[in-house]
Image 1 (spheres, one colour):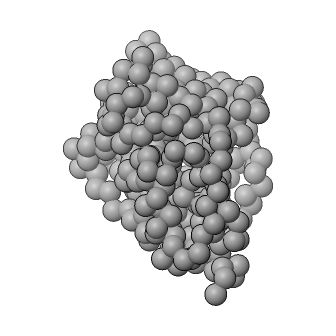
Image 2 (cartoon, helix red, strand yellow):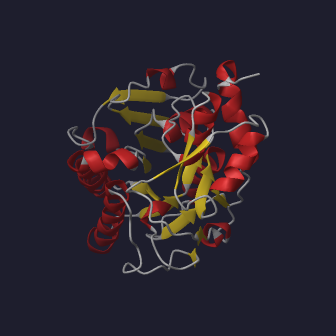
Length: 311
């Protein structure tokens, strides 16, 4: 079986490709435009796995050239920084929506299955707990990033109905955990970075005790591989969430290693000031087991930055 990964050198992609083992796939094609210059993600790739890397942008490349003979495409290429997406709406729309449309149509033309990682940020409901049955009317994405992901979801559903695209949408919780290509602009990793560098931990007003969904990077990788191995492409949405936690719970776990934290309350246009939990029961009923651990993910990240942690 041949697979293709777009955005292969990013936070999720870099951990994914370094997790592969000989014999899992006949060939693994990697596409990345290197916009973030994560060259190090290609260092020391697992031996015995046939990788082929191409420096290509999904928005401009002739994707058919790379999709031929591919069984499944894991479409990780995206602009994912929700906070900065307000200042680059056109770029986010082009990459996250138009780019996804190009990927989806190439999948249709070449008979590829599509794994599309969306985001739990599409939820903005007033309900205390939500699952995949949350109506479109209740979905209230709070940033151009989340809006682009929801719009892409709706496109895939349309293409599934009209063009027989085989896909699965995984609404991922906010990622935490380490990788060669990791990023630090999402909540848990950002808090750890700020704590290690003795910076004030910036928390949105009223958000300290509000729950949000988080996803251990190990669980994210396991879920992607589980989907392909199980051939789970039912043209449906699945929430992929390790835990629903409050900011206070996260900060308490950081304090285990860094007791003295300076918390600074800030305003932000991205937060909806709501609290809700996201159910992961649907994917669990398929047989997937979440093994992630928020405490371990935080401690692993702190260890990476131990050279700047106050002793």
